[in-house]
Length: 159
Image (cartoon, rainbow, N blue to C red; front, top):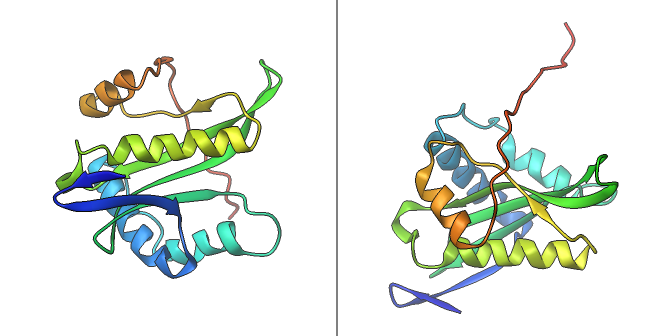
């Protein structure tokens, strides 16, 4: 366990009743990354992806300190055509400003790596904005290697 401000941090899978709190963390994360706000019904959407009918398409791990959520990581299986194998895509990793630097992010990444191993995957991949120098330093300290690439998005909704 990590000790942060006298409390112990635990990392575990999210529970359905915590999805509203994860949506708040996601909104903080989006604001931090200078992105648009998440969907207003994010908690409900996450519920469907995590606990809805059929197999879970997403995994969300939360970091809890003194009874409150202070961070989260979300990940999902992806596949690489060029490598002919699956990997775990770390979609989001966020730790609240007041607890950054205390090992919470590292614990969340460790939990994601454990998820990848449990799925039989040999790699975790993710991205971060180039300007986020603190995150880049953090990931490099973990031993991660950057692969420069631009990410594009194309909406496909109909009229």
